[in-house]
Length: 86
Image (cartoon, rainbow, N blue to C red; front, side):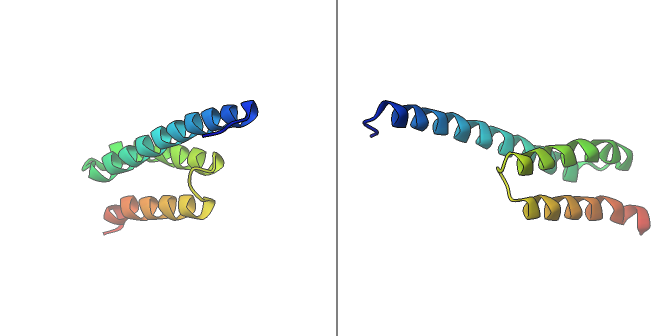
């Protein structure tokens, strides 16, 4: 355990950040799952910008890497636009 006052504070802050990041990450993953499970194309089309925004925020907060965010957004867009083409 930390011995210095500043190090103890840093440990508390890191714990808070970790919990916050886990919450945002889990919420976003659940939103992605819900979006992929949606059968209604119009509802999925309306929800897609919200999910993409959540992914962008994760990348901005450094919870996920920016390239992972780009890959997720690309895959979601491809997956949701495929039935419209076929």
